[in-house]
Length: 121
Image (cartoon, rainbow, N blue to C red):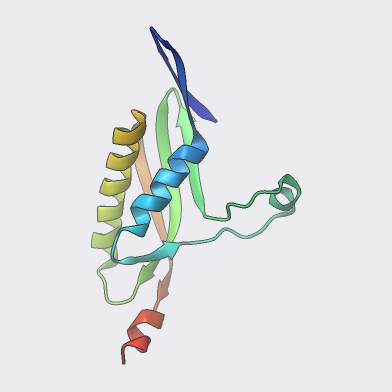
Protein backbone atom coordinates (compact mmCIF):
# COMPACT_ATOMS: atom_id res chain seq x y z
CA UNK A 1 0.00 0.00 0.00
CA UNK A 2 1.45 3.30 -1.08
CA UNK A 3 0.53 6.94 -1.39
CA UNK A 4 1.47 8.39 -4.77
CA UNK A 5 1.94 12.10 -5.40
CA UNK A 6 2.29 13.39 -8.95
CA UNK A 7 4.37 16.47 -9.64
CA UNK A 8 6.03 18.14 -12.61
CA UNK A 9 9.21 16.18 -11.90
CA UNK A 10 7.54 12.76 -11.68
CA UNK A 11 5.76 10.54 -9.19
CA UNK A 12 6.65 10.16 -5.53
CA UNK A 13 5.43 7.06 -3.68
CA UNK A 14 5.41 6.72 0.10
CA UNK A 15 5.34 3.11 1.25
CA UNK A 16 3.34 1.91 4.23
CA UNK A 17 6.64 0.65 5.69
CA UNK A 18 7.95 4.23 5.76
CA UNK A 19 4.90 5.35 7.73
CA UNK A 20 5.30 2.42 10.17
CA UNK A 21 8.96 3.36 10.72
CA UNK A 22 8.01 6.98 11.44
CA UNK A 23 5.38 5.77 13.92
CA UNK A 24 7.86 3.49 15.72
CA UNK A 25 10.46 6.24 16.06
CA UNK A 26 7.89 8.76 17.29
CA UNK A 27 6.36 6.41 19.86
CA UNK A 28 9.80 5.40 21.17
CA UNK A 29 10.35 9.02 22.26
CA UNK A 30 7.17 9.21 24.37
CA UNK A 31 7.99 8.86 28.05
CA UNK A 32 4.92 6.96 29.28
CA UNK A 33 4.96 4.24 26.62
CA UNK A 34 7.08 1.17 27.28
CA UNK A 35 6.87 -0.21 23.74
CA UNK A 36 4.60 -1.03 20.85
CA UNK A 37 2.86 -4.34 21.45
CA UNK A 38 3.77 -7.31 19.29
CA UNK A 39 1.08 -8.97 17.26
CA UNK A 40 0.67 -12.70 17.50
CA UNK A 41 2.48 -14.78 14.92
CA UNK A 42 0.38 -16.19 12.14
CA UNK A 43 1.18 -18.85 9.60
CA UNK A 44 0.70 -16.26 6.87
CA UNK A 45 3.36 -13.94 8.33
CA UNK A 46 5.75 -16.86 8.78
CA UNK A 47 5.29 -17.97 5.17
CA UNK A 48 5.70 -14.41 3.88
CA UNK A 49 8.88 -14.02 5.91
CA UNK A 50 7.53 -10.98 7.72
CA UNK A 51 10.06 -9.75 10.26
CA UNK A 52 8.05 -6.82 11.60
CA UNK A 53 5.91 -8.08 14.46
CA UNK A 54 4.75 -4.70 15.78
CA UNK A 55 1.00 -4.25 16.10
CA UNK A 56 0.67 -1.21 13.83
CA UNK A 57 -1.92 -1.01 11.08
CA UNK A 58 -1.88 1.69 8.43
CA UNK A 59 -4.81 1.94 6.05
CA UNK A 60 -5.04 4.34 3.15
CA UNK A 61 -8.31 5.47 1.61
CA UNK A 62 -8.39 8.18 -1.04
CA UNK A 63 -4.95 9.44 -0.01
CA UNK A 64 -5.91 9.75 3.66
CA UNK A 65 -4.19 7.60 6.25
CA UNK A 66 -5.73 5.96 9.31
CA UNK A 67 -3.38 4.52 11.93
CA UNK A 68 -4.19 1.89 14.52
CA UNK A 69 -1.71 0.52 17.04
CA UNK A 70 -1.44 -1.34 20.33
CA UNK A 71 1.00 -0.22 23.00
CA UNK A 72 2.25 -1.22 26.42
CA UNK A 73 2.16 1.67 28.89
CA UNK A 74 4.64 2.34 31.68
CA UNK A 75 3.41 2.17 35.25
CA UNK A 76 3.02 5.46 37.09
CA UNK A 77 1.86 7.53 34.10
CA UNK A 78 -1.59 8.84 33.26
CA UNK A 79 -2.51 6.52 30.39
CA UNK A 80 -5.07 8.90 28.88
CA UNK A 81 -2.61 11.82 28.80
CA UNK A 82 0.17 9.62 27.39
CA UNK A 83 -2.08 8.28 24.62
CA UNK A 84 -3.32 11.76 23.70
CA UNK A 85 0.30 12.91 23.45
CA UNK A 86 1.11 9.88 21.28
CA UNK A 87 -1.85 10.58 18.99
CA UNK A 88 -0.80 14.19 18.48
CA UNK A 89 2.89 13.41 17.93
CA UNK A 90 2.30 10.47 15.57
CA UNK A 91 -0.17 12.47 13.47
CA UNK A 92 2.17 15.47 13.28
CA UNK A 93 5.24 13.36 12.45
CA UNK A 94 3.57 11.36 9.68
CA UNK A 95 1.97 14.43 8.12
CA UNK A 96 5.12 16.58 8.25
CA UNK A 97 7.50 13.89 6.98
CA UNK A 98 5.34 12.38 4.23
CA UNK A 99 2.71 14.97 3.31
CA UNK A 100 0.06 12.28 3.84
CA UNK A 101 -3.05 13.47 5.66
CA UNK A 102 -3.78 11.46 8.81
CA UNK A 103 -7.46 11.27 9.71
CA UNK A 104 -7.21 9.19 12.90
CA UNK A 105 -4.68 7.64 15.22
CA UNK A 106 -6.34 4.88 17.27
CA UNK A 107 -4.34 3.58 20.23
CA UNK A 108 -5.18 0.53 22.32
CA UNK A 109 -3.33 0.01 25.59
CA UNK A 110 -3.01 -3.77 25.91
CA UNK A 111 -0.75 -3.99 28.97
CA UNK A 112 1.09 -2.02 31.65
CA UNK A 113 4.79 -2.55 32.32
CA UNK A 114 5.42 -2.60 36.08
CA UNK A 115 9.02 -3.85 35.71
CA UNK A 116 10.59 -0.37 35.65
CA UNK A 117 8.79 0.55 38.88
CA UNK A 118 9.98 -2.53 40.78
CA UNK A 119 13.58 -2.18 39.56
CA UNK A 120 13.93 1.20 41.29
CA UNK A 121 12.71 -0.10 44.66
